[in-house]
Amino acid sequence: MNIIGAVVRFVVSALVLMVVGYLVPGFGRLTFWSALLAALVIAALGWVVEMLFGERMTPYGRGIIGFLSGAVVIYLAQLFVPGMRVTILGALLASLVIGIIDLFVPTQFSRRENRT
Image 1 (cartoon, helix red, strand yellow):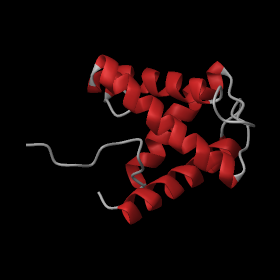
Image 2 (cartoon, rainbow, N blue to C red; image 1 turned 45 degrees about the horizontal axis):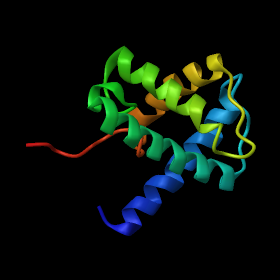
Image 3 (cartoon, rainbow, N blue to C red; image 1 turned 180 degrees about the vertical axis):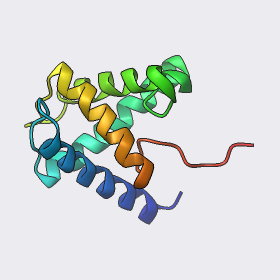
């Protein structure tokens, strides 16, 4: 992936997090810069979870395990992002909404690469 592609993916991810802040109860609204930082933190935490437990246990994984680990990553991200406030229910709902949005607008929350 080139640097421009990475920047675009993080900007799209930040915009998705801002939309989630408006749609999801228990997920505080974020400024663009807070959302961008949250996107970076979520990507980093997702990478750490993937390294520790494998791809099935990450937000990139499929099914209930991926959904729940995505919610945990979102919930933990608030510890590193000033101004980000998420309840447990808010993290669960945000994980669901991000998964639905990601079906139409792929972000760093999913892997779209071909693996052979």
